[in-house]
Image (cartoon, rainbow, N blue to C red; front, side):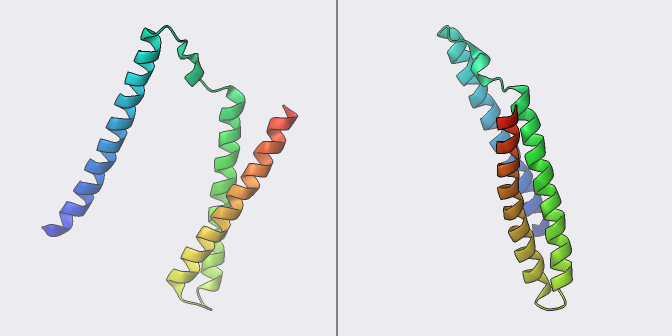
Length: 109
């Protein structure tokens, strides 16, 4: 019976965070509209959206490489340490590569 409290607590916390985020965002936008400020400042350009997709794609590929490297190193060192270390290492490298790729693409456009 006690094992059910953790998942319930997790999803309740997740719901509460999302609820507070969306209600606060809505109140902020309504306050801007009441003051006469244009609410278009919240809209993102399509180039930024595409660059986000590139960033996430590079990050996910790097995580997959990290899982594969963790599997390869699991015979040499502790399996949990190998997976954890390789996923973090390649995830970080993927974010760095994604930064430079999106920077180059943004300059190009």
